[in-house]
Image (cartoon, rainbow, N blue to C red; front, side, top):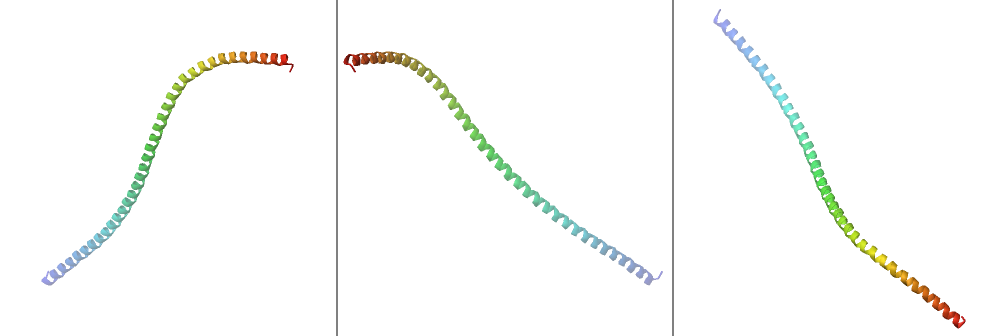
Length: 132
């Protein structure tokens, strides 16, 4: 082989290497474009998930506040019921006293009724005596 043939073979080989390097560069460029697209899609997905998590957090926070308010109202109702129970117990004792007084008043009213009847009889006798 002559020196010219060797140079031609070497140039051909270099051209093949340059072609392969160009092909590698194009494939690398395509791969980088696809990676960039993938990262963009992942970023959008992450942003969407952040939005969903934010909304879920706000909803849970609202529920916690509502539950706390409900617990406070239930506690207040419990306290009021306990107060009512004490009042009812106290009223029972007072009503027993009222029952005793009513019984005593009934006895006195019976005496008053008898006196009124006696007075009616006296008035009627007076009226008869006067001729009225």
